[in-house]
Image (cartoon, rainbow, N blue to C red; front, side):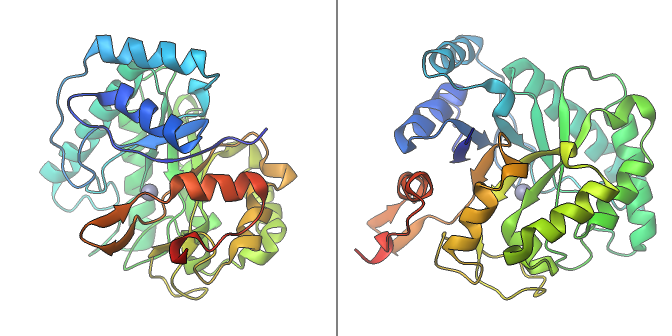
Length: 295
Ligand SMILES: [Zn+2]
């Protein structure tokens, strides 16, 4: 079955209920949100009335909470431990994010693995695994999804081998809580030819296992293969192209895995700014590209 949704806004006054109403307005049957700003660790308490209303609305609309996603803020960096105080702060903040997922009862948290900066890739991988071993030790019924990255700067997670390296170092009681979130823009920018997605999936299956893929971010890319850039483009307006993205979305091996759009808002001018998701989701369902931006 196709699970398709987008990034949505989680705002203080409506919280998960707002996320759900926004998702329904796009025709989504899954969604992703940050529990606050994606750039900061500022968080406000969860309103349980709004949460419960959201969950009953999800039931009414046949939205399976198991397919819905939370994204951790970008600033968590588990790859570099040269500042011990900062490293411990990030681990602690990750624990709090996992608790928020449990409290909201949306139990899949996507995390950027981090950047090793002044260290080596190998040290980065060790630090990430160590951080996850600590953060996930006592957490039950919550999944952490390591995102496949573009390889910008010193990012860890821009290859199957990086992700395998992290997962291999996890303790047994943590390993079963850790999964992967693919991203078509990041894969393209890291050097994967999306046209040949099955070749990538063969390697992924051999080294990590396809059952570890829990989410896929569907984005076109402004940049060519192996550019290590990470600039998301609207579907059909980038270098990957609409048909290649459709082939990922409808790939039999990726059926039932939630697909989340993180494409940029359309910004023609200050007064003409809008989310593209309703249009993109309709195009995906019809498997047909429409040049809606220029209509
Ligand atoms: Zn991400």
